[in-house]
Length: 351
Length: 254
Image (cartoon, rainbow over all chains, first blue to last red; front, side):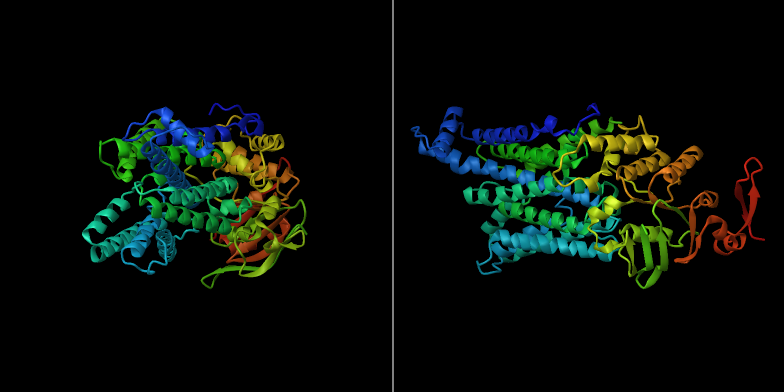
């Protein structure tokens, strides 16, 4: 903590952080668009973007243009949205539940979303009238409500001071919904469907196209705006819900709005790309080590780190083994776990 | 009346924890709250702070019902210092004290130099100069208590509700905490265990079995018979020959 004590909050000194963050974000998305298994020169990437965005008319190979515009760019944008959304969900849950282990996975939200998605796509519930995203959202919400009810009945509750129960209930919920997902797949899916869905469950951005972008980006941006808006409320939960209430936070309303939004963001992201572990748990901790625990800085830092992390993981998943795409969940864990171990070891030396 | 409770009660699963409390505190007054463990002091403070919703009766602040007040406005008037509020976050002393400004700042309203000034003042009042950049986990129990006090002071409340604020404090800081609260131009209610500290309050309320069994000046309320009845100890009054201050000497009932 070497920040000067006087005027360290002043707007004049910190205004540059938002544009700087946006530039960093755009640079990462651009890098994700440039790198892939087919080498395409930088100039062609720039010309393609100029053709599509600015209406320029460079003569280009339509295959190259297709790869860049229809394949890589939407993929990078969705990866960024998912990374930011999942990381923010983890941050909100960790802050509100005051538990360093809370993330959308541990609380059963992702497992519920998977069950919902599988119920719609494989078991055919809803007869095609219900989209996979809606199914995933319903599953996510159902799972979370069940977990919350169980925790409450066990004496902990989402809103109570003891938060050990919510984690235990989340583990039970995750197991149940993962088993339900496997059950539905084993019972109803044919071999090809089963292989596809297993790949999806480990996280997969291969099928991502522009319509997914128009769903993922607004949801991620909504999540980010809500978190920025509630940054001071999240700070006030540092000493628990009673302390937050005595600082003027409408505790119940903030909890309902933010946890509901977490379920929505997670559900939408899981419905687009499948379950991607690790991001929600680890990215907020990584961001805390860098910018500290105040949410005014932590929220943007978490969103940015999560977005960049998932773009990098996606690039690696496409390029690590030539000619083969790995599930992105494998990469996030392979890269993320050692990186997190390093952060933990470094953090130990702090006062 | 600054703060008033009428027939205030709170039950959990039909077990009454606090019931039938009538209380009125004048502006600027310091009211001590004493009573044995489990007599309902903390619950009463939480009800008065508006953190618990009463199951019967109501609390009014400056004549207006507390339940009708938005949380933010309530927190601008009332600061509440709970017992043993702890955190696992790597948060600094200054960060914690800055939380006290929360009720005064809208969501996107920038932090001002005035806020900085108030936080610096609160840190100084709680004798925490030089502690600003210390991490919470490195503080002792008494230092944490003083940081919480500084946070409550940074809230600039009209009413200060303190739940055993002298816990964990060394003797010097116990005295300066009570002197500071007495000197502040705010109305305060302090739950205390030390009967001698209660003697220094303007008025004292005695809690027993969830009821407010006595309320009045320390001399009237803290009689030898009542102390024996409520606390189950024998008290004898001793007078300091230096200045005539009365103190209690406490012993087992025989």
